[in-house]
Amino acid sequence: MNIKLFKSEGKSFSIQGFDRTVSLAIQKHFRLTNYQILVLTWLKGLWTGLLLSLVLHYFITH
Image (tube, rainbow, N blue to C red; front, side, top):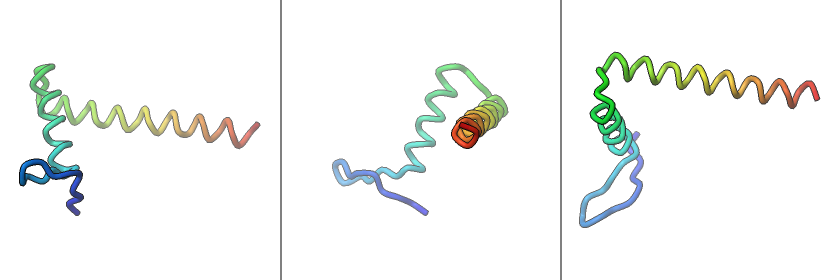
């Protein structure tokens, strides 16, 4: 699935290409390996899930 965001000078940018560009920029800026990026992504998902479950728990119990 390739969703187009916008067109600029005949070039079209997709979400997938933008995500890859941002990921590479972060990786180069902080000098991270591919494995470190993978662990960072996993921790971000874990943190997001934890926060979401706490918010849902709060709304269900109160």
